[in-house]
Amino acid sequence: MNKESETLVLGIDLGGTKILTAVANFRGEMLARDHSITPAAMGQEAVLRSIVESVNRAMDQAGILPTDIDAIGVGAPGPSNPDTGILFTSPNLPGWVNVPLRDIIEKELGRKVFLINDANAAAVGEFYYGAAQGVRDFIYITVSTGIGGGIFIDGKLFTGAIGTAAEIGHITIDDKGPRCNCGNRGCWEALASGTALAREARERISRGAETSIMKYAEDDIEKVTAEVIHRAAEHGDTLARELISQTGYYLGVGMANLINLFNPERIVIGGGLSGMGEMLLGVARRVAGERAYRVAFEVVDFVSAKLGRNSGVLGAAAFALQKISSDQVNK
Ligand SMILES: [Zn+2]
Image (cartoon, rainbow, N blue to C red; front, side, top):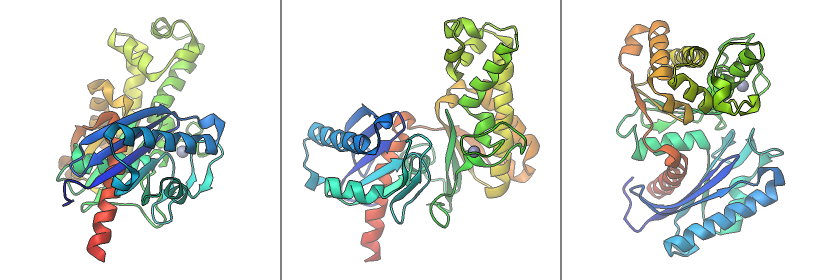
């Protein structure tokens, strides 16, 4: 990315619960950042209105006009086609099917818009500004309520035929495993995500397992989350530790598959569960090492994502910047 400093892009990280908007320059420095709630349950119109309002606030904050923005990148939660700008579907935005999101936002804001999957955006962010700078073959994995990712091959984001590649959360790990949100059974995210961890804990607690987890959940089983289980584990709870270790096991099984498939140089791990550190990731690494092809495993380094909550929004901005740069080169 070799742009002049005055080039400004706007990144939008559209999530099921929040909308993050940032004005950034080509170095990934944020001149303004706006955070708001996604009114997902109120439908598409309401969400689109919130996006426009968030963009306006971010521009106000940066003291710029729409005409100062060179391009806008939108990271959306769900499989999308970056070439046509269509968001196929979204597990987090009920009722969104085949939405021409790029064109809608372009019309609303009057600037060039580029659409990308949110986890892919985070991978792009880590590539340009974070933990994967200078690494041409890497896989970004985000582990939170679900599992998402982005795959870089030879310095380029791999998107597949219609843009839905790297839905790594939905590779099958156990064909008879628990039902996944996507309808399949035993997907990676049905076994190794925060949601899976909480589900397992609730099941074990309902069956009468001895544990202090409920103490950290205000004695309300609905409040048993990955975060609560982590807290219990840190206080030495045996069940919590066992369940986190089991999650780490499945995380490692999936990583072994990715290592054998892509021979990455680096695996960048982000998302809420990465905060559990070695308790989770140590197990995952060990299991990946036991299962992956040895020579391939030996070249992988495992690092934590660097951009945290900003990876998606900065990645969306970087994606837009990359697109306008390559458009100029291709002219
Ligand atoms: Zn699935």
